[in-house]
Image 1: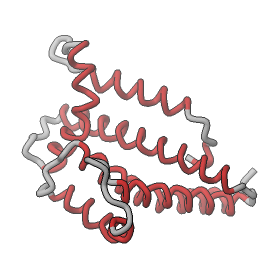
Image 2: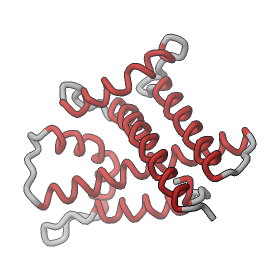
Image 3: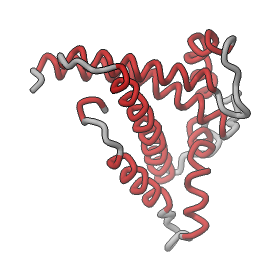
Amino acid sequence: MPSNVDNATLFLVNTLFSLFAYTLILRVILQLVRVDFYNPLAQFIWKVTNPPTHIFRQVIPRYRKIDLPALLVLYLVATLNIFVDLLILGVNGELVQILWLSLLKSLVMVINVFTFSILIQAVMSWFGASMHSPAASLLWNLNEPLLRPIRQRIPPIGGLDLSPLFVIIALQVFNRLIPLSPLLR
């Protein structure tokens, strides 16, 4: 059982690694959905993630619309995060186990990005956030590929779009099926 100091340290370490990893995930997804990179939020994401991905871009090219260097940096960040977490917990992990846990952690983080972005978009829609705001247009571009198929099957009921609810529930079911310890999430 980790001590309070260990819990606080784990929280801090995971927060710092996760913030950068989420930014890398957004970079990859925003390129996949071809978001407008003149959007100030997209430019921020690009500038923050460009230095580490630029190093690998010279060796590993993009594959179609997939930014493989950014995915490699994401995997390395997740691997380093898992390694540091295990050190803090005083657990020895084998390399294969750490690499597997890193893959699972990356998958959990991708699901979390979509969950939180859909939730934020839904809340913004309640307050009439303009589609002309940089955040709203970025969220719409990010989430529309997931929400559109559900909207086609379940139309709005009484003017209320329930597709975000169904997508978030499905994402959380997938998230809970991933065998990753809560301490490493």
